[in-house]
Image (tube, rainbow, N blue to C red; front, side, top):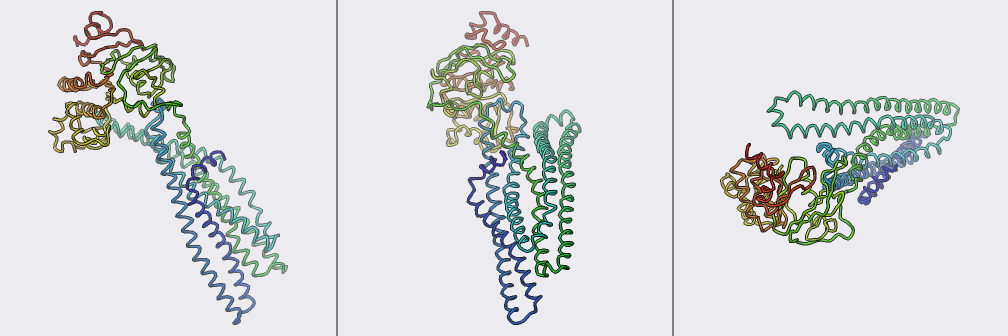
Length: 576
């Protein structure tokens, strides 16, 4: 009930459409309840003999029936269409809300999540809300009103026979409760398996080059097949329970009909029930058991909808670990001074990543972070942008704690260039301009020139309109990096973060990227991570991290003179 109440609040914004749909549903129900009564009345008129007066009565009743059937068309259209309209708008809203929610969650949330499973929740699980609000709720209202309306009518016709008609109802309701408890875990398992299947497909399609290169098509095909049929088996378990439940409900309903026919015939034999009332009873009987029989389908759909709804609400109810503090301010455009004050950090596994890190840099300085893999260099840069918050200590920009700055204004002042460069499946111009949607073509080209990618672009057949493909697959690694640098330059952020910007490129491309970085030196604050020490020799300050701590700091020449960690790193690279 708590889940249903939460879902009802979600749909409340479309209450206007639902009210009209529900009123139309009630109108449809009234029409369905009225029509059998008119038919039974016509039977009674015919039974007494047809003369001119009775013929006029029959004609009048026929016209009323025609009007009722026309109204049924109108009510059914309004009920079905408006309920579907409201439900699909709700689905669209929920998909957008889920995407917005996912965007607001910190990076740690995604460490144990698979992209395909999250996509399944956004696209597939939200679709079950349409089943709930466009089908189940209108049908439930129709069934309840129809059941109660028919029950009242049957009681007015013959209360004894009406009570006999109700005998199977407790058995049907009891079996429905048992069915709901049995089938819901199967639907939940099916939804989970569907998410895992989507995750497997996404993973396999993303790694298709590696799969073909290592000849693992059969292996990956079997993995997809396994996930596929896990979902099939989970769904079949739910359908098997349904296949048992549906015939049981039909049998109980049929048993009720047998009871009515037997006792109705007996009452007619005793003269306690007229032919007109028997006809009315038989006509209403199908209306009476239809809602009860429909309970099976409603329960099945309800369990499926709630299974999907649980997966949706788990995302929507996840608290955002990184959010604006109360009273956070828009900092505007900063100068670019960055300071770490005794910063320590660990992920959820509690293993320390950074320990008491302290350093500061003035606006326009280039600070390089070097050290072995896994010592916390990338984590340091992610803390600056508040993708995570420090476990201990403070991070300041222009002397202001970043927790007191709105996330939007903080990240507006920082432009990242990551080692694993992500480009969207669009043109080069669109990817560079992504950082500044209102940028002119001249601004985009100026940024490309500053990043030393302009000439490469002009040598391409479609130049700036060249499609880069998914994740920039049509460009070389160096070209992607320089497009990313151009994107960062175009944004004109005072702080630029370079995370291994030259890690995967050849020597010639590295020189071009170094030239692009030099173009920024002194104009922006640069925080650079590098394994190749040749790329950061000109840095104003080089910090050497070891096991999460800063163990050395200074310029290239100063660190070499110390003959410590940095010296050994330089020596190792020269001998390779």
